[in-house]
Length: 120
Image (cartoon, rainbow, N blue to C red; front, side, top):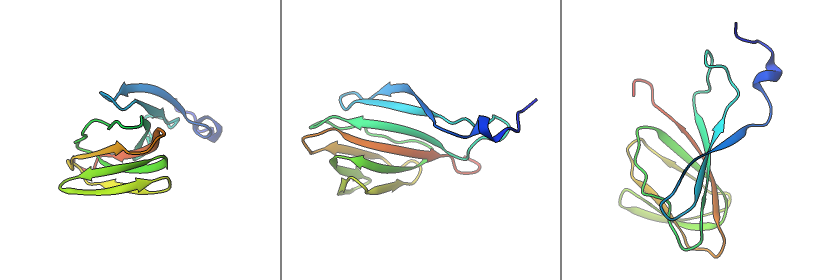
């Protein structure tokens, strides 16, 4: 029987180590507390990209939004580039290649929110 107690599905979210970029740093996936019978329509991860490194070139089925928490980096997606700083947000359509190179002296930290489109 699924609990209907909102306290059990609300509150701080725990993260677990998911994988490491080849050179950039770790990625942690959020463990959202919602029951499997009523999951969130998205998933959440956080990542770090060390100074003078990049995350791995990423291409996947899900749409994705990056929220840059700290640091500065050069974003490359499709055939475009641009600079992202703390407070900036970038959005990627599914199957859009994207990567960020940390150009700053400190680690770049970001939150990723991602989800599959209906029927994908």
